[in-house]
Image (cartoon, rainbow, N blue to C red; front, side, top):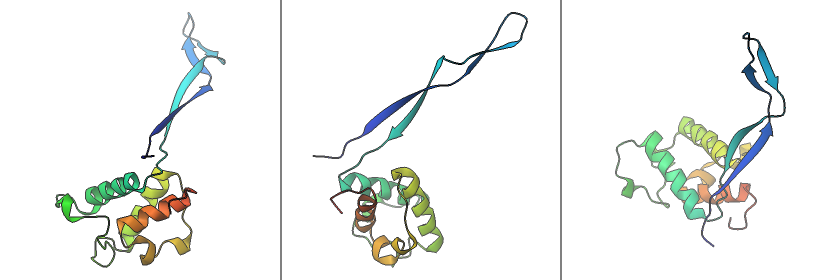
Length: 130
C-alpha cells in the first residue's frame, strides 16, 4: 500500500460572538465553528524521505541541485547538517509528523542519511516499516 494522506476535520462548539441591535455583543454558545486539523499518515518511507529532502533543500541547501541529494547521501559527515541544523530538523520532524524524539535518538547513526531519518520517523510513529 502506498503512502496515503488523511485529512481529518474536527467540529468544535465554540462561542461565536455577534452584535445585537444597539451594538452590544451577543454570544451564541452552541453555534458550531469549524476548526480543521490536518493529520498526515505516511506509512511509506518514500513519502517521508521526500518531505525530509524538501525541507533540507529549502532550509540548508537553497539553490542546490536537488538530484545531488539522495536518500543515501551522508548529510552529517558531508557537513549539510551541523549541530544547529540537526536541532532545527528535529523540531521540524516533531512538528510535521507529530512525534517526539528522545536525546539518544539524535545521533549521527540515525541522522546521517535521509533514509535513516525516515526509518527513525516511522519507528517513532509506531510503524512496522522501521
